[in-house]
Image: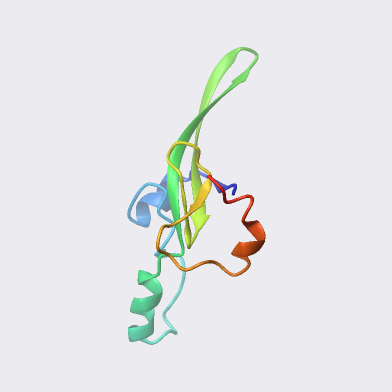
Length: 105
């Protein structure tokens, strides 16, 4: 299954604690959420991302672009293909059976 590419915005990822880390984010206001629930929300692993440096050419001149390749739980990006693969032992995602041909390695 294809991943979701995100533009690499270094200051956003760094303030979240690391390269291609989107959550938890200080940009999301959770002040109205009770502290005990806020802690749970901030610890959720919504998705996993890997950085990728892509090279492209314009008029034979090479340019590099850094992107984050992200997959929603219960999938994670394969570090070689960047395709989303189901995490071994994770519960199936709703509708996952409809994608069985796409999820074959």
